[in-house]
Length: 118
Image 1 (cartoon, rainbow, N blue to C red):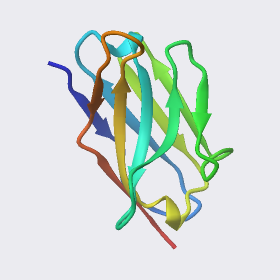
Image 2: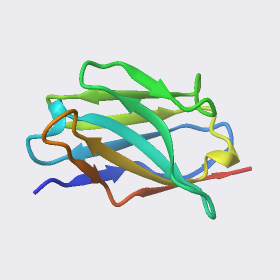
Image 3: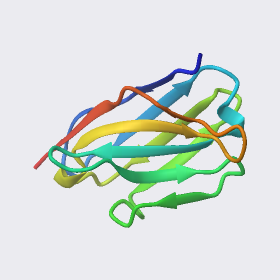
């Protein structure tokens, strides 16, 4: 059974930094596209950053230049380094593992809360 476990969230002042981690159990990690999503109160879940199997990355415009997604296939872990945090970065951050091609799969972690105070 695949499990994604996020950690690293918390309360931080505006301008601060956080590093989120997502540890993945099972054997799917190296074959997966990994992503970080966030859901702010009253808003839909949105993609923050993604990283493909080969390491190519993409970012939401709102975090571009302030955040870095990376993956360690040996540790089955994906990271999101967030700098210069803003109050609008507040939300629950979810880790996602998605299959490429067949078999397709889509797994989510339970989420970690990030709160940025002004």
